Image: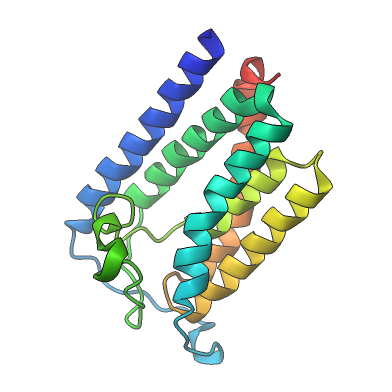
Length: 195
């Protein structure tokens, strides 16, 4: 029970920190940056991938963890909270706003309520769409099918995010390195929560 309470506190704290920093950072008038890969990338808006697959992906992974690794859930959710805390810190330190050709993924439509609550305009470094599935893969490394599905999702999200101009290339590439570091640090700091 104690593991669950600690895990829930870390996860809730991460969600609150991410929301607070996202709203505060969106209030800033940040200039658009320059991405050296931008001229070489096609422009597309794969909303089905980076919105709908994204929304279906999380519950699918959580269900797999519930079925296969229920005892590890407190650890996995604490790691997600730690990921959100670190991401909030990086977002808060970000000096540039979104690329000029950014696709408005969550504005309007049935998912408009996410904008300003769970999705922000100035959340650049590092890409959560790329990093979260990679974190899930690292947490599921002992389950090859789930691990590979998470790695494939991370790669697909990276491509979708780049061609939709929702991140700079450094945000996507950096997500894998920062997320690996988060996992390594979290494995040490949160090991007592693991089964």
